[in-house]
Length: 414
Image 1 (tube, helix red, strand yellow):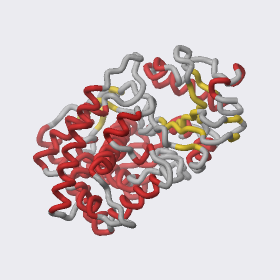
Image 2: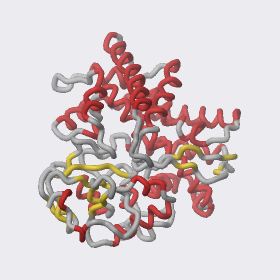
Image 3: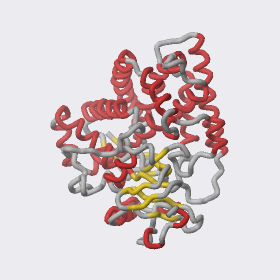
Image 4: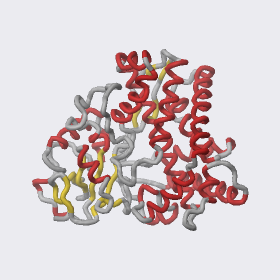
């Protein structure tokens, strides 16, 4: 049975559901309760937006999210993985992000990008992370900012990405302004009326800047990732201007937004769980890696990705039809009691911790997982060593987004 003919018995009616835009305006506790009810059901159910008649099968259990992630021939990304799916004209104009591609195009692009991450580049990036983290903390001590997100959590990953890509210092602030404008328009909003012009214009300006850098690097290559991507020759292929712009946009979301949000949530979690903080600071070497993994599980920076069913398929006891939409809810999967004992407890010693903070595996597992982990470990060590009293002073100001667990602002002191 297709999505448009889903039986009434399989439609989620137990309360607020994540297909409704208003769901994402609810307090975090109410959202968590709804996902708990969904996980308690014996098979995935269809969540319907009552006003549009459109919806999706909600994959909320760890096993179902992993199974869909690792069956890419059935659960395809091609129509788009975000909600709403990107319009065709937007994809034609700005190029296809890797997250919206399936094999063989996805494998082709991933091969080019992977080849560009040489051991020499990775070693230099690791050195850059330590240098930038030290500088960020120097500036915090000197300037005493009030917002952890802007001064610390966003600054480190953005500067690391810019260094890695080879973006000149003089262009970084302007590009960051465009990134922030573009990212404001991600996810479901309260109103069905959306005016995407501002976000798309910001995206166009940002990608234009990167395309210009790509043209310059083709003429005069340097030792950076842009040069490697535009000069790489993998089976006769290298990144074109639109592909380079789309990849840079992906890096800024996957490499900056997610790390920024994880770091901000991490500081607040360590503030509100003083016993875990004490455990961590008493043995940074022994517990830092585990703390990073538990922050990623507990906060889950990316809330969901969607897939389209390419062929009739049974998953977790639910019959899915070709053309149906499914949504992989990573945050819900990371609270699945079948995998994580006491899932609502923040425990930096949790082991094993097979969280889905970087996806459920398969070909779309996050390319930047290693980089994000390194950034979090280095910065947390720098902060807790040099500013041992650092803590949040209020609840994080969250964006109402269905896509990412975004922190707009987090007051802090040290």
